[in-house]
Structure formats: structure tokens, C-alpha cells
Length: 117
Image 1 (cartoon, rainbow, N blue to C red):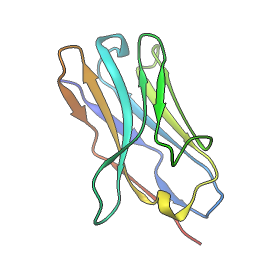
Image 2: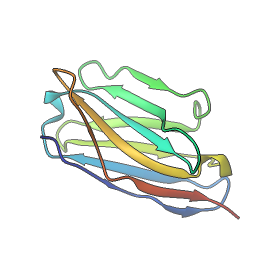
Image 3: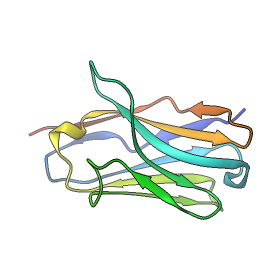
């Protein structure tokens, strides 16, 4: 069982920045890949970014490339998502995801990000 504790969501104006954090209850070394997903009202949950814990390879949705940066700190068992130049279409509930070796996936509770003027 992996507990994921998210923080950092909030209200920001277009062009602003927010940083999200996801603290995992397990060592990141025991997690195969961690990622951020988001779900806007009336839309399906979509992958935003993910990072492999072994080699730090990353994958980003085209819509956030160049604006969002995913990272992780193994010592702190924490994953981050730095979101810059936010757009209204970034408004969504953002979820932390962790997939452990063996393929079991865990989700955080979600944190609301609202981009509005």
C-alpha cells in the first residue's frame, strides 16, 4: 500500500505558476514510475507527465511541454510538478499516481488547480 499526499494546488491567474508536491509513503526506489494526471469537469483523466524513478526518464503531454517540469527527490520520497505559464485550460484536479513494481497503481486524493483571471 502506497499513500500519496498531494499539496500545492490553488487559484492562479493565467501566466502564473504553481508547484505541486506528492509525498509518497514508500521509498521511491520501490516505485517504478510516478506521474501526474489531471481531470477537468466533463473530461477524461489524462496523463500530464510521468517520471521513471530509476533513470529519471520523463514523458510529457504535448499540451504541457515547455511549461511543466516533473521531478522527484528520492531522499524525500517526493515527486514534484512545476507548472509555469499556466493557461485556463490547465484548470483541473491534478492527481498523483504511483505504479509499483508488479504493476499496482495508487492514486492521490487530487488537488484542485484553477487558472482564471
